[in-house]
Image (cartoon, rainbow, N blue to C red; front, side, top):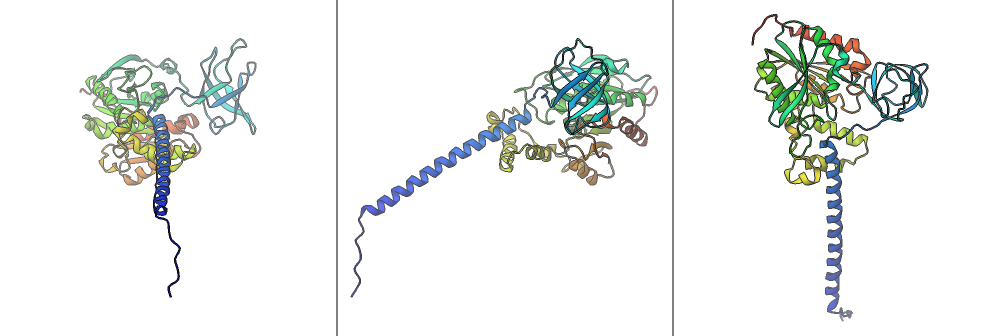
Length: 406
């Protein structure tokens, strides 16, 4: 005899289907919401990468002793370093030169002031620590001219420091992201002493240069064209040999010029300070430093490579990370490269510079510092920095030929 079964109402199956559908709709809605939120957050992360930004205060002025001409700063990995630096301030003084560390404790650092401050000066406590040191071209006490470089977007301002005598070698200096050509002033004296003319250039979206469509950085993918126009100007002025000098993102730009320029046969060397050699590595590192989740970082980097994501990222140009990866493109290098980088650089890690040297030991020399911070190697050890460049110029015979024509 078969056991009896309880009758199941006909509408039970329908109720289950309705319940499942409700759950699916709810999950789908949640997934879309989460995806949309992730996309929005990724867009914001990406937007910060490509948008030119003003200098952000990172140091606090605790005290100024006008009698002793010293300044007490909040302690940080930068402010405690040996050497000469600068400090962007607000008030009656906009920029201060800083000398050696006199004393320090757990919270503060006392440094010698190299810019005189009077009792009547008023200075806001929030400041920005800088490796610039020289704020303007006049401070080098070398002859210079203010010129412009014609580009496809308009005229880009530049400073020209002619060599003391006839020369066929020019150094074209390229500053980094979010700064100006004043950053490059530190390098002029060593090239001038070698008899090399220096041209310090600006490029699109600098504060005093033409604005590109959208006004955003392409991380070197488009900026190199403006620098290449400066190389062309140098050639027309008599340069037969060009040395590119790049700082941070300026290093990425200089490397793009070295690979893509129609004048690449005239580029006899590239000198890089704290350069960006692989943008993806740098951006992943910076995201990790600031606590951005890996998933969000991956989405942000992906968005920057997609034209349809421009509204989210704010980028007017697709960022070709593969083309900007010089480790992957190392085989294309034809000019000798000197890299000055520090293992203490926590903004642009040294690993990519090491990798480029390992890929091309025949062309790439790496002078690695240990404590200096990002783009502050000259400040930390000026004698070593200048000496290494002088030795490299001599080693590669990058010296002027007197009376040479174009």
